[in-house]
Length: 194
Image (cartoon, rainbow, N blue to C red):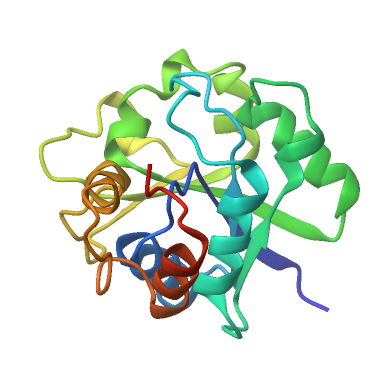
């Protein structure tokens, strides 16, 4: 049986929006990866925690966004790991837990350009493929030609979770900015309203 190739799409997903879903679907359907796991990060080492919604709320929204899409999955693997979580540590946990799967990273050109600052970035580059989507205004840097790196012109939206949170705080609807099921849950729960 062929090894299942899993793309790991890390993010705060605070909240998950249609731009995230378009990228996840692109990577799951237009590349060699058979699935994309959307890894909800409790705390990115480079981001402030204050503006984050609760971990399980963000995970639930990702699950709602995915719905019954067969090649997408929400992952809470980092929830029980020491904080802040580092990608290399998450990869080690996943490799131990799923030895029959081959994992790859999904990131934007902005992250690729700063990958040299990541913990054990040399091991990541040695052991894992990296699937990169072009982000306007960001140069991929020296790693663009690395043998483990593939760059894609994926469809992108100029949309941010920060913009959506601001919209919700103003009492406005996030309809069309987030998947319908996510919009309904945010409205019903009042998440991000205050």
